[in-house]
Image (tube, rainbow, N blue to C red; front, top):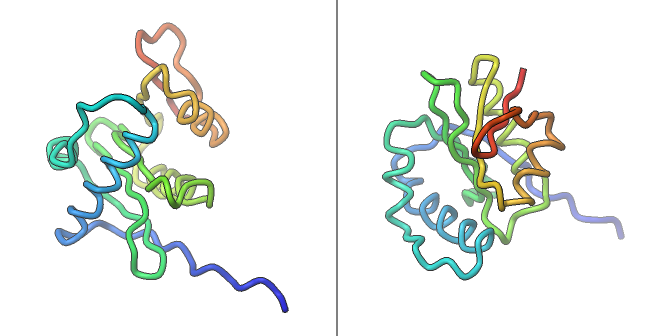
Length: 140
């Protein structure tokens, strides 16, 4: 018997019904990335994406990740994949979709102590900006 094919990853524009699941992903992914920090709350999601365009990754009808964009500033603001769904190419697919929506050069920021995220961005062609106080990447 061969391997069973995984359901495809579908990237689509978020709809109002996706907010609760995206907030859950935002909370769990931040807690996983920064263990021991207790200041994270699900309500932070709505504030963080209030002015952004949001796209989601969906597998078999379940939203498993999202990306938010500030198109006016050409900034990728947030990208999160639920910890249970990481390391399956979902983040890379979201990043590719984001790059298709942003003009170049595009920018993103991440916490300097988030080594996993920094490595992910570099693997996907983003370049650290020289002299930036926070960890800022850009993509030509």
